[in-house]
Length: 198
Image (cartoon, rainbow, N blue to C red):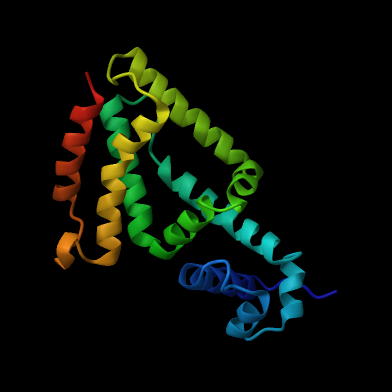
């Protein structure tokens, strides 16, 4: 039996993310991945049972990195405004540092693999609990207007993700060059807070 090579495994993960972001699931195959990594297809089967297993394991790694970064220096006990701003900072920092991983995560999120991946990550349950506690504290402290979870998520994070998408593309509406700055982020955040607070 062959031994796992950590460097080879990292190459496989990075290349798979690149290929899935570029070609989607339909254009992705174990053969193409092996060829791009200059390894045999058999080598991939040391690490993964099949294509779905590969996608789900890489998805779990990416999701865990994202969720971990999202709650860095964050506490559900923070005031609503302070906590939401920390979430914005963390999400923006991760997206700007790892744009391909975020694009991959977005593809995964809207696929049949999503629930399998999220159910496989123990830390995702912790993340949900932290975020629920944060919202509950905001409501209890009268720092948040009551609304459905979906409405909250759209208003709380929609503006940030729109700005991050424009930043990643390097252009805003009409093709104007765009780079997200802290000032623009603060401007959007101030309007978001007004919409969410009593």
